[in-house]
Length: 120
Image 1 (tube, rainbow, N blue to C red):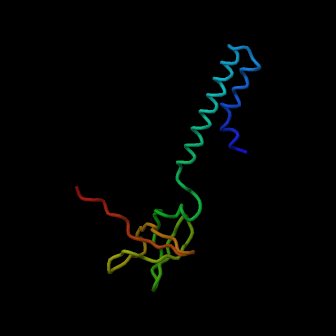
Image 2 (spheres, rainbow, N blue to C red):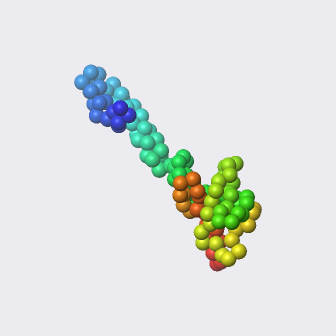
Image 3 (cartoon, rainbow, N blue to C red):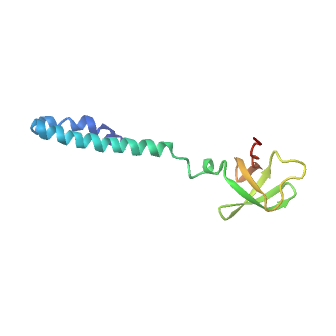
């Protein structure tokens, strides 16, 4: 149903059969302008970053709350999540460290250390 709005320029050609030419041109320009704004809104919506679901979790920065044997407890948006560490040095993360989510496995997050800024 929403795809019908994309056909507005084609449907708008009908004004040339109903209205006198100067009025039809003006009406069609309004229709074409409205359609261009609609196309822009659709393209902007498709380029927007995903904000829901597991895709939204990837790349999010979280805080380590507790370190337990074999798992971490991290805080994401005020919620506590179980996580596993990947790519940490021998010391591993400590409570209060910031890490980034690299994967989601079921209800367990896989976190890795934040990328350090490159020295210039």
